[in-house]
Image (cartoon, rainbow, N blue to C red; front, side, top):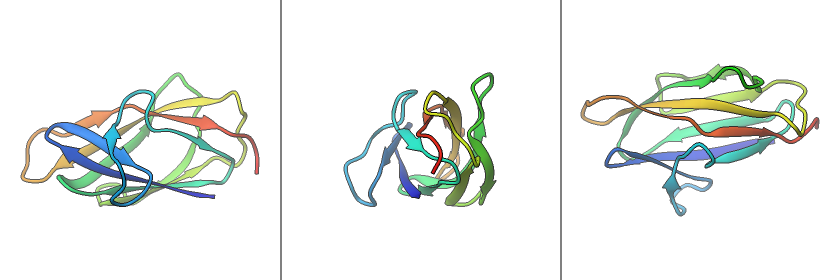
Amino acid sequence: MNHDIYLRLNGTTLEWSDTDGGTYTAVTPTSPSTTVNGTDTVTFHGGDGIQKIQKIDDKAPQPNLIKSKKGEDTNSVVVTIKDTTSTTEVDSYSIKVKPDGGGQPITVDPKLNGGGNP
């Protein structure tokens, strides 16, 4: 299954929505908390106020659910989830974005939740 996460900057606050132009809320350690299954993809779309998504990274010591990433340093990063996941796995990861017009990059650390195997 493909999941889409739309990102935008509101001042220095990174916000997200699961629909383009939908209701946006602040990215926090618990939001978005996306449930993924083995081989799913998650596409991060950079929007208003974001020059580019610089990096999506797993954070230790959590289990790593991210198998691969494509498109870092662009406005559309596709993350593929490892082939097998457990419903007990919760993976902290970081999103680092570069604001339009310069300024310091902003990094926020939400979670991926294992939903099991497809």
